[in-house]
Image 1 (cartoon, rainbow, N blue to C red):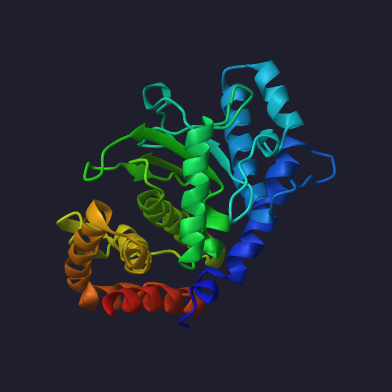
Image 2 (cartoon, helix red, strand yellow; image 1 turned 120 degrees about the vertical axis):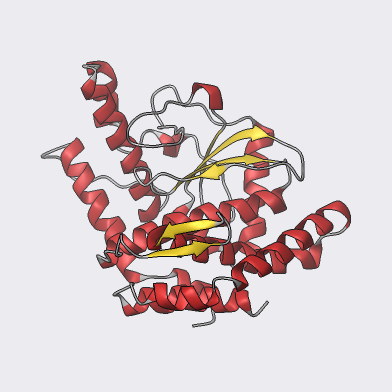
Length: 303
């Protein structure tokens, strides 16, 4: 399994997206016909989770007006304010990190699309669009099309600064990230976070229950981590390595040096996982998923 398109094209995920979207819409709007956006089934799946999260939060505090808004907008009205990209229409927002809520649903800040959502400024949306195109050119269009539908761009930083990025399981298809204003670097981080969303969906779709007692040493965290986190790292970082190796061909100067150093660092870290990754893969019960995780890990080791 050498093609990235073959790796990311995983039928159980497609079925999960259709089924979960249908079920959420049935809860939000019982007795009505299912609605679909003009974007894609994966986008419907992502936006349905925003609607569900927003509706639940409104119901908890008795906000009838906001709850009604969500029930009338199963796509969180996102499809009216999208940004065209190489992988389809995306929702690009730039919320203030300091104003993002924290709650028991997530250890990290998060943002839910709602009636007050505004698109990011034009320059930020353009940055995101170029980043999607850059990632697509490297072979990651299928991944980003289905698993990076909503992108929340947070703090602008300088090249070389520590960049924070994350996802939360309650909002699949959504990514949160800092950026340096460079589409090549942003594409790398989009791929990393979309990879986490992909693997979460794949585990759910295949019903894989990973042994919570098994732990492996993570060279990225420099500590022992549960198999779930170890496998996530051994999937998401190799994806960025494959992308970076491709991106290096078209970069020069400081950016080229930055990406070269990143790839060298990741090569060293990934090499430490070679033996443990083989053992961790034995915890994956689905053959198709196990083969995909093994293929990406090996391709990155071969760089």
